[in-house]
Length: 444
Image (cartoon, rainbow, N blue to C red; front, side, top):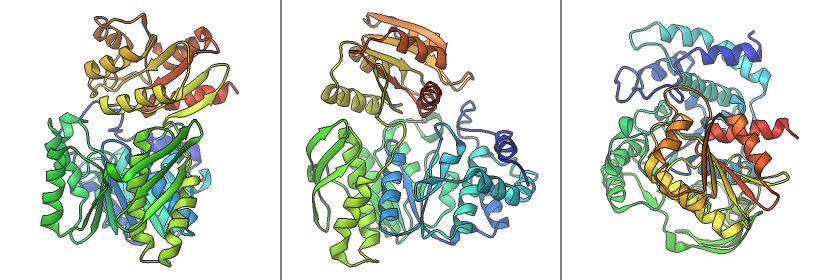
């Protein structure tokens, strides 16, 4: 059997579309042929448990985590597949909020390795890094006989490897412009790709959307006979918020939830929570006494644990770690900082993937930050070089902006220059958030 280190290294030898330069609409890569063959060789493990499938541009990982937390605390063994990871690849595959063990990771990969190599030699081309993790998660969930698996789409929806599943319910979180060279140049085109997770005669829960996006989902749902549950902003009411979380009310289609607590900050997290409630409510109302649903949802929300999303780390200076990567998510980040934090200076350490809107993000961050340190989570063509960020933002009015390509050095410089009264914010991608968390763990 492979050791854990050998198993993780083996997967790294395959095409990593998460970090590789954009492969655009290359039909040879962007299809479901390889994952279909691979899972078939493994006995179609994804058909052995109930699946909740989550797509969207913003908040899909958070929403998936909230749904999994509620189902776990309702007494169901629940798998969770998310991507990318912050620190360990084992984060991608969890059961009841516990990462797959190194032993199970190694055992499962050893068992599926012959199928991986067989599929990689066929006419569809070599299988990808993400497709292997998708198959590994499904194999592990079936092996452990989970009741449910909450599965987050990697990219898009229609042709994402996870879209091989036949879910009991689908979820679409908020849509914004992203991965435009792959998914399309407009919100409507992107929504068309995300709509691929809407299945015939299955329910779908949809977050509040721009009108042009809403029309796409309405049409797709109607054509496929999918019962659509729309979450409305007017039915969400925040009661209070602190750094430990927030209390809120939510009126679903079925009942009023009063003074729920979730240990996450930011108004956008209430939207994610409301979407999760609507999803889980539909599942639980078919499985438990209706009167128990409110209490089960309430308890599951309280127990949510989330990494790298508006996560506060206490050191000499408060450090806020977030995975914002689009103009809309940066606006939400800035709004939360204004609402909850008192500080003398805001020092932002930022690194961005090349498919992000550099100018729009710059306009938001320059207005918020007193000092910006541009950096890189890793060094390859998929990432903006630190100097490119500085050059693009040099025309904006900012007290201090510099480039430090090494993420670890950038974080260390921010900590060394910050006073106790300052706030450090590390943001731009999950990859940079992960680098920050690694550094902070090492310095404990």
